[in-house]
Structure formats: structure tokens, C-alpha cells
Length: 143
Ligand SMILES: [Zn+2]
Image (cartoon, rainbow, N blue to C red; front, side, top):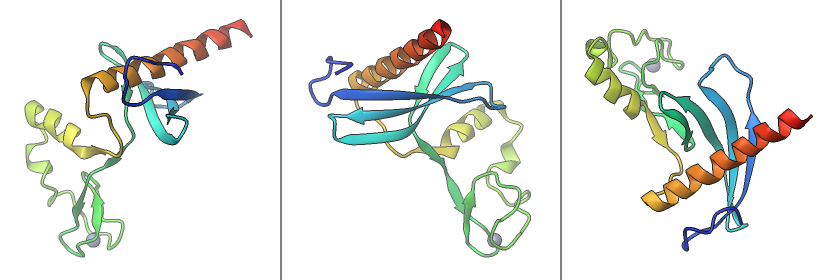
């Protein structure tokens, strides 16, 4: 048991997978096990402006293509079903140069697939994942 601060659920395992990628903000992926019974994959460790933080698994929000109504990821350039050019039609495009709108749009683009609903458990996840990441880095230095 890595964290014992939350009586509701215990984080019983965290595995870290370092990722070499062009996205320099994305430092690693984590897989977390709850109560030795439930596994959450695709947790991300991201280098933000205020240091490392943990992002829960998410998927890109979708909107229907105006031509074929196939649901495509928001801000796609083309529909991957019918090939329609979505540049002009996307709801996000008209305001793309407004910084306040862009900030909101970026947050709305991704929907969490699994996430904690209490501050206490969010903190517990953050600490467990970052501790495991630090330990992973420390172990690498030894070899
Ligand atoms: Zn389409």
C-alpha cells in the first residue's frame, strides 16, 4: 500500500513507463491499481508551468461532421469518414484567436475517462504517481 490517507480506496500499485517522444511536456505514462482489484491505464505525468502534474486518462471530445454526421475529434481538419473539409464549419474556429476562448476550448477538447471526484483522493493519486515517478528516475541514475 503506497498511500494510506484515503479510507475509501487504496492505491496498491503504480507502474511508470518512461516515454521518449516529441512532446517534451509528456514525461511518462503510469498504470495505477486500486484495492488490488481495479486497474487504470494511460495516466500521464506532464511537465507543466508549475512543475509536474498527473493527468487522468482522457479522450478527445467529438462533434458530428456537418456532411455525413460521423463523429470526428474536435478541431479535426478533415472528416475521416467522408473527407469533408471541416476548417470552416468547426464551432471552435471562429474564435480561435481569442486567448480566453482558446483556453476554455482546450479544456473542453478532452474528456476524462476515469477520474477522482474528491480533492483528497485526487491528491492521493497525484502523490502516489509522482512518488513512483521520482523513484523510477532515481533507480535509473544508479545503473
Ligand atoms: Zn463526414
